[in-house]
Length: 242
Ligand SMILES: Nc1ncnc2c1ncn2[C@@H]1O[C@H](COP(=O)(O)OP(=O)(O)OP(=O)(O)O)[C@@H](O)[C@H]1O
Image (cartoon, rainbow, N blue to C red):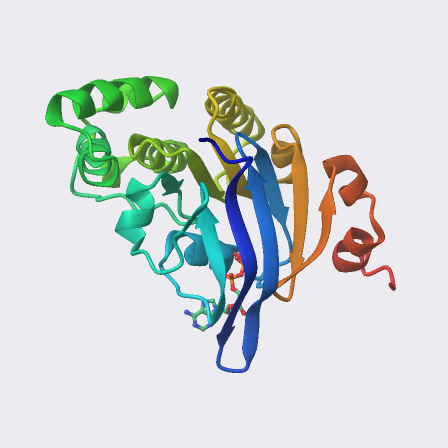
């Protein structure tokens, strides 16, 4: 049975000492939905991904994937359960080739056999425009290709829920456009996406719903255009008094 909500965060809280980085966050991702997350620096966006992927454990609250409570699962188990992510700062194995990086993700994260991994990685290289660079060392790639590789590595694990952390940052307009097209293709294939992004026009070209985080709280959410015009966004980004 497929659940209407792919992913549910129920009253997730996390503190670092006195700092509250997640404050009773309730958040859902519907099956196949593309959800955008914005918020000022330090709002707790990356922390949210660390909580979803299991790199951090919440102080309280539950995380449910396809109806199964995954709050106590390891990051590896969550990856196998279908959660893939890209990191804000690309984290490839620099001394491995592009293809080898994908193969590691497909074999160990995606649980594929060798033959299936080779086939799947070839497709992901193609999808992310890296096929001509398959044999290059990851550490030798320029920024756009490092971003592509970060995306390809996440996809190599065969996620049904894909978490993208500021993947468009630092790219030129043309590069950004290319990346948006790739993410659209991934979404069109049925992958649910949560995308944290400061490059708002890129985000708005893809997402169906937008969430605004501030001080670890969801302060607004809804239709992207309406959220962008909301008083909360004006207050946070333009200093308009609430
Ligand atoms: N491991 C940690 N230990 C202590 N404080 C942390 C830790 N990780 C994050 N923080 C703090 O938690 C807050 C939220 O950080 P987080 O990286 O989630 O913000 P963000 O919204 O992703 O910001 P940015 O847009 O700058 O990436 C910040 O004040 C940060 O300094």
